[in-house]
Image 1 (cartoon, rainbow, N blue to C red):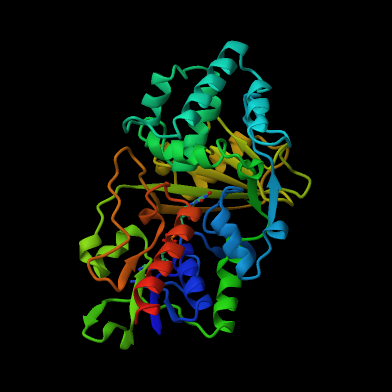
Image 2 (image 1 turned 90 degrees about the vertical axis):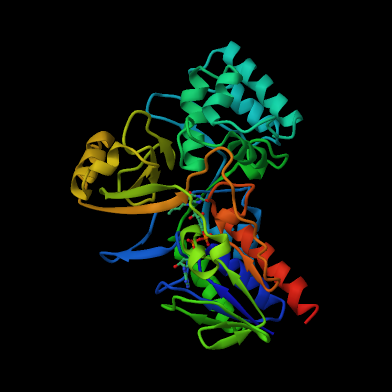
Length: 411
Ligand SMILES: Cc1cc2nc3c(=O)[nH]c(=O)nc-3n(C[C@H](O)[C@H](O)[C@H](O)COP(=O)(O)OP(=O)(O)OC[C@H]3O[C@@H](n4cnc5c(N)ncnc54)[C@H](O)[C@@H]3O)c2cc1C
């Protein structure tokens, strides 16, 4: 049974692997020269880097399982660290190796620079959210949610707002409180301690999933058509025709801005948020106290220590930084970091449509279409999450299982 997957990002990869593992003859079409989409490895000046710094969580269960399935070992490929939120003002919240939820309670109660009254109030608030199953009575912004809860002190500025920006790529004033609550539910609110862990890639994104998946798919007989942008999907009486080949079913796993050209009924009019990653190379002795740190009041909001003196500075969402050209941005960030030596190399990578704007009440298209043999996948179709790798992977697995139910088991 021939099945087409259009789009070789993490959603399309997940769908192709699931289908192939269950016996389908899969063809994966990808417009770009390699797999990975918005989370891919790039080679620049002889260095293996990412198109943008990514951070994963222990809660990304389906992503980690998919990696294992194609032979990529998360235990070797990630530096797994219990969550710490550290910033340039001296604030520190570190989760210990205790079972959940003790780890979160201990982390909160030992957070630096926060008074006891605020800590207890926050612990009480978090307990209430948990008891309500992380469901909000109504949609609102994260800022409104925090206001309502009286979360107006140190933890708002040093913990909730930075976490919101990191998870939703939107400031609290514009971000959906329900989506943020969903992220908290599966991380800080999880009953598994390891779900709160930070997973910092030791290798480029290509080696985490796209490359191992490409080898696995080819070894299992799947076809991968790179540099092939599908222009049209034609429904015929016998199936679905794509690029001259007849398929029994298809999964459209493009980014939201591209779905409308292939399936107009699912066209989206989302707003988007950019992310820039500025790589700065210092001497090998330069390292940060913890591999991930937050910089309040600076342009580079998160700094990731990639090892051997390479720092990745992340600029999330729209902001003043967009006015700088690449050279000025790199110079500004280097000055903000104030390292004891000058950077010997830099590279700025801007992704203009890194994520859809996860604002309150955003309507997301259904993954089912009016055609029972065509399904949608992609981060934007996983309505429980903002744009994340885990949402993309889960959406791809779901679409593949629907195809299996619809076509493979009842041809
Ligand atoms: C800089 C940056 C940082 C991020 N940081 C994080 C992070 O820390 N943690 C996290 O979880 N998430 C992060 N994200 C979000 C995450 O990368 C995305 O949610 C995820 O990669 C989306 O995957 P996808 O498969 O849904 O879509 P995409 O990756 O967009 O894949 C769609 C693919 O479809 C292809 N395509 C489009 N049209 C066609 C066509 N007609 N024919 C064939 N192919 C087509 C495209 O070329 C593309 O490869 C970040 C994103 C960016 C850009």
